[in-house]
Image (tube, rainbow, N blue to C red; front, side, top):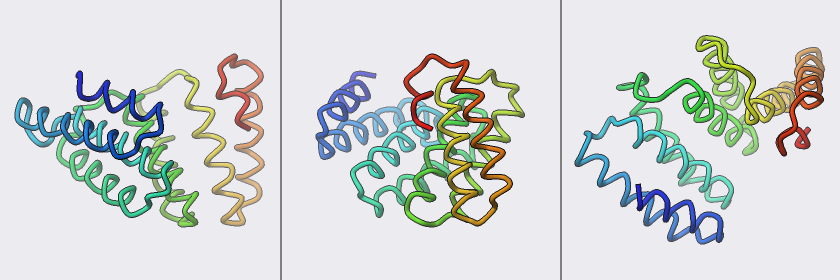
Length: 168
C-alpha cells in the first residue's frame, strides 16, 4: 500500500510522472502477490485512468481504462459495489468529456445500474454520476432525460452536505 499512498501523494502535488511511476509499481507488486486480475489492480488502473484524464493525457486514459476493463471482465467480484460504480463513473465521465458521448453514456449507465444492483445508499460521489449523466444526455439531445437527471441531482444536493453537492 505504500506505493499506492505515494502515488496519491504525488497526485495531490500534480506530479503526473511520479503518480504513474508509483502506481505502476503498486500494480507490479500486487500482481506478484495476488495475480494479474486482482481487484486492487483494477482499482489502481482506474485511478491511473482518472489521473491521466485530469492531466489531459487521453491516450493513457484510454489505455488504463482498457486495462481496468480487462481485469473486470475476469474478476468483477474482486471490487465492492461503490468502488465498481466509481470506476465505471470515472471512465464514463472521461469518455463523455472527450466528446465520445455514446461511450460515456454506456459506462455511466452501467455505473448507475451497479448502484441499483448493489442497492447502494447515495454517497457523495453519486452526485457526480447523476450530474455526468445529465450533461451526457444533454449533449446527446435527450433533453427529457437531461432534465430528469439534473432534477435528481438537485434533490440529492439539497440533502447532501459534501463538497460534491456544489458541483451541479
